[in-house]
Amino acid sequence: MRFLPTDEQRDFARTLRALFGAADVPAAVRAWGAGDHGPGRRVWAQAAGTGLFALAADEAHHGLGPLPVETAFGFVEWGRSGMPGPAVETAAVAVLLSRLGDGTLAKRFLPGLLAGEVLATLTLPGAGPYALDADAAAYRFRVSQGGGLWLATAPGEPLASTDPARRLFRPAVAEEEPLAAGPGVVAAAAAALDWARLLTAAQCLGVGEALLARTVEYAKQRTQFGTPIGGFQAVKHRLADTLLALEFARPLLWAGALSLERGEVAAAKLTAGEAAYAAAMTALQVHGAVGYTEELDLSLWLRKARPLRGAWGTPSQCRTAVLEARPPLTGR
Image (cartoon, rainbow, N blue to C red):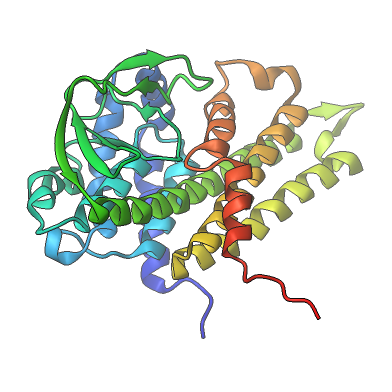
């Protein structure tokens, strides 16, 4: 077997990286945090034009997949760029709706979502009670504990967040339209949760890589005692540890994308989330006080690392999922 990306996968990742690189993503992130979704929506539509969200839905429902590996490649670049918005949630909704009933709901909602014309957010049992960027989303889906699928007509109550570009909302349960219910919703929600964890892991990996790259570059420029701090052994070790953590997370991400088994996906989410958070701590330590300033673009990635670490599965939840997926130990 060949455990390397194909030429097509590499080309897709390069296309997205070039697209985000040509856009002023930091300005779009700051505008998003201030409540202006226009700049971010324009970049979002361009990314959707590459087929990024269509990769999460099957061909019978206007999609190109499902292709979890290719989608994960795309979301690594999404995280690397620092793009805002409920991208993971929109992809998870595509997975959810593609697996429901006779396709009526997929026909109603998916064309606009896959084309990047509208955004969606999603809340699932056991994955946190809050909806991300519900004010920017045209569709606000919620799966209840009993297996009901609901569509909210209002964004709900906004809550404070450590990242201004990741605005959380308490769902407006009193203003919801029932869409579906039953075992089919439960099964589709479980698949959507696995995809959400996988793509959040990919986003974490991209965020961590962006933080490390900026930190390495800064370590080459900042000097102490007339010497770049990147030459100091303590700094080298810290950067090397950060790189090792990210590189250890990468094969787990691809393993989860290839199998989509719950334990594999949870392991990918756990390691990528922890690696991104460690990269943020390293970036802060190496940059010093300047790392805390909002004017520095670095802050846009620093603020994402911790929320993403707990999104769609906290470290403890992911560890539990990994252990539950292991075969029972047998003794003599």
